[in-house]
Length: 231
Image (tube, rainbow, N blue to C red; front, side):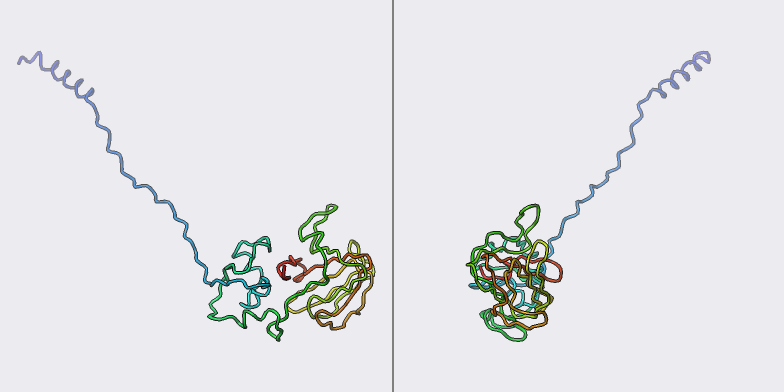
């Protein structure tokens, strides 16, 4: 090879090397992030089979639980969902046996207060949660026979009476154990006085017009009376 051609060949090789394909760097293999799996948390507890005329309030007393715990654990919003023979979950309960007989819903002891009873026999014309005149019913409005007696739904002490309470008319409130109160309104006559202790079933008021309004409250919160009363 002549010395004259050498620079030309070197230049040609340099051009070829500049045009040579550059292999791309290998892509890093990044493993996908595994999705977080939601774990199902199984609350400790047991199941209870509902007996005839057994209320949710009675069941909560059997297992020494707040009624709200049973309602939330079973997604109960309507008392009509509860039927005799149905099994409902009792959260947090590790008791092998109930605190007292499951058949004791009509017997009364210090730790087993009697069930709530209806303040009067009649027909419910407005239920808990019903809306009327832009107001929500916080209890039950019951049509009864005129001149009927209204009785104490459970034993308790007269905490309040009023001759004319806005929206309630003549009103009477009884205080019971566990921070529970019962309210009786739209009354014609009140037969008891503040401070008196009243046994369950004792007449406490009368209704001349055949209407009584009844509420159950826990503290300041209105409760659905159907959770406490046998349907």
